[in-house]
Amino acid sequence: KNQVEQSPQSLIILEGKNCTLQCNYTVSPFSNLRWYKQDTGRGPVSLTIMTFSENTKSNGRYTATLDADTKQSSLHITASQLSDSASYICVVTFDSGGYNKLIFGAGTRLAVHP
Amino acid sequence: NAGVTQTPKFRVLKTGQSMTLLCAQDMNHEYMYWYRQDPGMGLRLIHYSVGEGTTAKGEVPDGYNVSRLKKQNFLLGLESAAPSQTSVYFCASSYTGGSYNEQFFGPGTRLTVL
Image 1 (tube, one colour):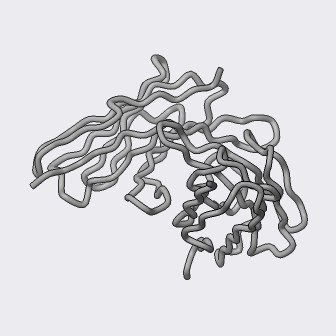
Image 2 (cartoon, chains in turn green, cyan):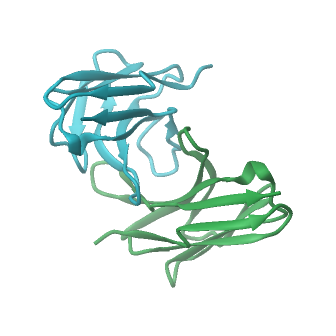
Image 3 (tube, chains in turn orange, brown):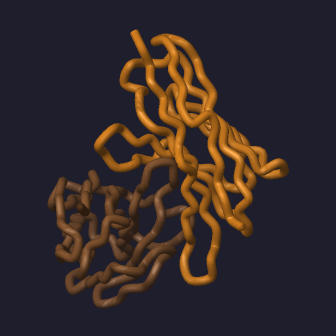
């Protein structure tokens, strides 16, 4: 079964600290993996996208890694800010035959405290 | 550009009532999608459209109908609302269905069915 699992479910850190969010997937055939940021009351916004051959991608203070062999990805946030408080969703795309289907993880809810 | 907009933002229905959610995009995207987001679960695809006049079922289509009469609009209808349809509904659009094409999400509609 195609699944995307994220850990932890929620996380609290202090402003300025770093954190790492995890994503494990069992999706096949794999096309790419995205990390989305979803602010409270808003729709998800893409942060990074990685294909099978890429093992790291950065977007400012956000760095995503991908290990296609172990089917694991992580999102590292450096020097956290209050505005990083949001849910972070791991999304894996696979070719379902008709169109490229997205499998969404349940997300990690991050709270950054001053 | 407004991107993807959704109306209404909030709605409370009684069991058995009907309603239509409207999604509009001004990016000239071909593909449009309706998802639902429930606590502790990833977004799930309800219906999607690959172009004006076409619609297709997603992962959880039961109880919903859709129409794409104009390229920029995608309507989601609930004919007889049930409490199980209490959820946050997100519309998204993409230029094509290709795996590298980012889906852009609207702000969501929070629906409560009593």
